[in-house]
Length: 328
Length: 281
Image (tube, rainbow over all chains, first blue to last red):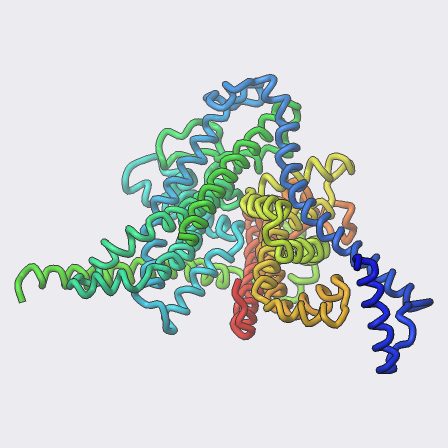
């Protein structure tokens, strides 16, 4: 028996059984029913295509952002070359462009902010992850920390301008530096508050992932609570905590409004951390709509490109570390 | 007890207290900001403030009606773009967990989430403002939609992943076509998580200023035309806070208060919702 006969037999059999049971006489779909079936199949394939289009659109969107930034910064790359990145003067009136003051401003504010915020965010992570994982006090602290991330950055900037800057100014008078108030230090303080939640919430979840057998082993050997934290929890979660710090750094680098409002906006290289300055983001925010020459505008966009690449790389490394940590 | 043991226990207790103090120190700046904005802003709020546009420098009074209307319109248009696209992309990612396109798409969503807001502003300027020949509220909405997308996509994907396969299989077994399974079974089942993601994304972009600087630009007059520049609350706060006039500072404090209340209410209601519906985000 070849395959066709088998199929025919089966078909016949099923036809007979159908007739016996008396449900359907003919297995053919006709008329409006057929139309409806076709319509359903068509809308199904349209819907599936739509999903694919949307997923492709995300890739195109990000590629488009990169492409636009590169194309628009070509005039500046051509005119100024790679030297642009460490040129020390920024004077658009004289057509002199150098990005060094802004690179320095961005790195100084971000790293100072990280230095200030890390002890606090690690403390929150340990407190919520190890000391008190449950209870109303924990809920309160957790929600408060999340609200810190929710406050809009322009409000941080306005508050910084009205409250923090005068405080910093009186502090500067006390230690005897130029008392301007606005500057790198004020921006770093504001940034430090803004980025606490990112490292804290990631740190909390990695600390909760430490296997309790490890901790119990240490306790049974007579370790104190602190010794368990110091010698078991922190070494175990080291890479996760580092990834949290990287993600905060990514946020600090790209933060625009709060920094723009309190940094003072001068394109001179800051002499110390209390001097006013500019970051890459703040100089773009301030001068983009005023840039009247093509090279000037293009130089600003090149700063945007550098900022984009910097944050993408830092975020990607951070995510890679988290992924590795959670898979292990 | 010997001295060493006493020292170790004392050290452990001290560091416990120190950690708690450091952890709760973070509550202080938030409380300082909230109390300051509330104190400075609440006295400025009255009916006149909500329904009038700002007066020129030197004249007392005036309101922020243009910024309130502008914020609502810009966010509504941004949400109208980002929500359908975001949900569809989330559905694709949860339906195709390991296809090559899904991995690329997921990577790009991750990248998009980390792009500094000012860079989004630059890109929106070159995509929409320059070709269309002028600043417009619509370009601002597109910029904000780009920032909303990653949050909507992520929350949709994470929510739908947690739904049991049996739901989908039951619907398929009844002969339901794919699109109806997604639209009538899967999305309604995950609506709580999707909705929280949408609210979170609105809360996040409501306070964004940087993408609007070169797109919506700001407008001192009342305008509801999305092809023209439009004022929004964060833009108004930025422009008036950095101005040297006290009348304008007063307007900015009132606007900050309204913006803060709006954003915090959205965040808190999302939190309550996720708690009630036991959503994981």
